[in-house]
Image 1 (cartoon, rainbow, N blue to C red):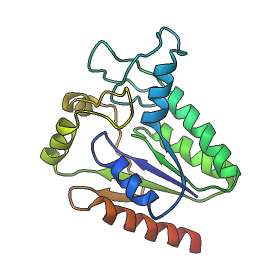
Image 2 (image 1 turned 120 degrees about the vertical axis):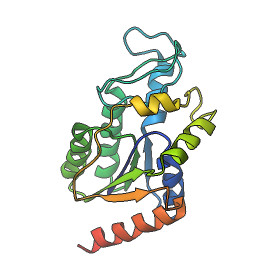
Image 3 (image 1 turned 180 degrees about the vertical axis):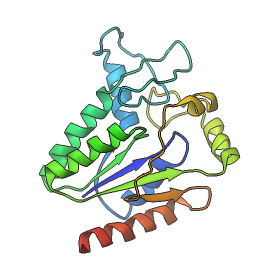
Length: 197
């Protein structure tokens, strides 16, 4: 089983992931963590070791950095996550992917991972319909829980490349009206229905 949480920074994806993982043990693949490790390694062309954070890149999409201490890793973080997910799913382990998942191409790639592993998948589109609340969450997040990652500014979030998911085959969770625990409960219900199908 593959669950893919997608949505702009600050909508509550990682908070929902923690609540879900407390009830549904799975391999947790967080793009922020993978991308920051790539930056820290200095292995990407044109980077020095220890380059820190940004708002998260979008699989080749234009990223909007917020200062001189930022490196865009392009699609590398997503490619690593897809490979790790394929390996874990092939071992029979469930996977929870946490990423902005901003474009149809990234969503299609996650679907390809699940299809290759012959497992069902669930797309969870996390939104915050209360713009003022979303802005407050972003602006109050001064430190990331990923060492070295600089949280994005509200301006960066607003400029982030993001094509809203329009597929009918997804669960939409609006964190303006649903707690992380409530979202996790809804996801678990969907997972049970997928298993029963």
